[in-house]
Length: 598
Image (cartoon, rainbow, N blue to C red; front, side, top):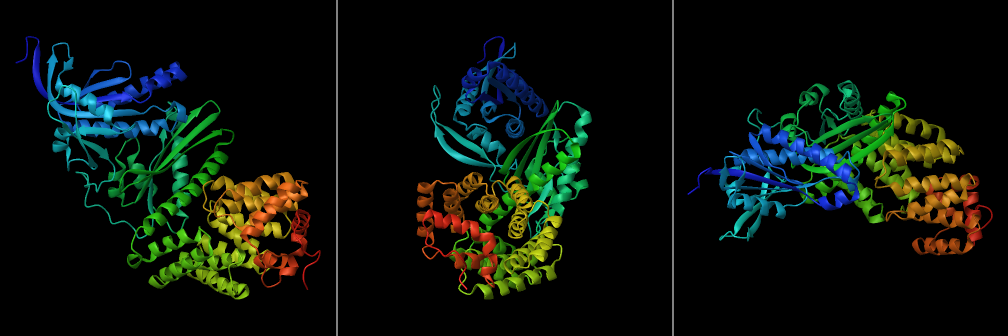
């Protein structure tokens, strides 16, 4: 029985604690206290929203009670999601992560509002078992919350708890769920047959309502820019902006809007600086696919919006493409539809090995056969055939190039607004020595999709071949800025190394070539540039090592074969552009002629 001034009750207890609080305080106590104060306010707001009560908050701990275990779990989920978003605004070493434990049990409550008892002790024990940013619940909470929330629960065993006779069943809240529709939602919309995304309104974290226009402007620009990507379905602005000033569950958003991905973000302005954060979420699971933060000087607002939009769109193309490719790669080959065959083909394409390019061609052809009006795999087939020539894999390079031309033209005939098709045609035309039309095609690809880093790379290569080094370097810089995690990043650095070698900037060429060969997919081209640039920079010992590595990778290296990779129909025509490279390789110790073979 309870003593006078006490009463027993059954409550859901939430216990939360900061991970590594002592370390944070030691590094910067003032900043840590400021962050903790803000995060406690966030916690309190969610607790109130879910009809709970903060009981105590000693040090870095928060203790709350709820009448409903379901409300307690929902409060924890929403709080962790919001804190994760706020952490994106902080440097990695300043981020503050909470562990949360939730138990449903009998407690004693005093008249002054304090609570204690086994129910509280178990919650504290569960909190210590949780992962940073995670939530662990007891079996009693699970029994009430199962199937009532759009999350899944993973059984994590029975845990011994001090002074508790029986082990406690424990579950971890995970996001790999098959969420049920929200009470207010109709039947979930069917996903489109291509990647689908909703861009939610960005949060204004500046504390100044007048800055809403900046957050809204970036989100609107993103919706417009993403809409130009032909392989992506983008929810209209009026639908996604219906969630403004809300903190919706992204799983619910995915169901209500019929999209696989949700992009959310925030904008914080301070003085003349601005911080923009964005995170891409798989709406089917709630898992984060990608997150990034951008810090910029606010000089010209419209220029800044353009730069951020281009950068974000390029990142999204890469991340969504990689995620889709991995998803398709996990499926049995015989079950792939046209889109999945295309994505699996891209997975092989970016590996750029001879066998992978052959398999990519097979998958692109399968995608085109399954959907004859699907332009992207046709364009990708043209680009792959071109790459087989460029990487010296093609047994009959001239024939390969002719086939590549046919596929690129067919892709444009299927969809003349498809940037990848114009990009593929531009690369093929460059190899055919048709530089003026190639440059025009590549500029068209960029006009259609300014964030297509590959098109900027292709344009850089074409400009280099017509000896316009300044513009070529600018395009390389743009490609690197737009897609710093691109699967062909090695080619971006190799292209810039090429141009700098041509311009006589050997030190910079060495730096870029070394950056290129750090990527496992880097071809022998990058090694040739490195060996030449080192020799021309009078670093002969290093040049000899680089040359040995080149010949180890490509024992049959020769000037004629190298130029044929760029122009199979007339290799000798490119001798003036390649002469400096060959001079460097000769200086490194390679026995090659002073003039092209007639």
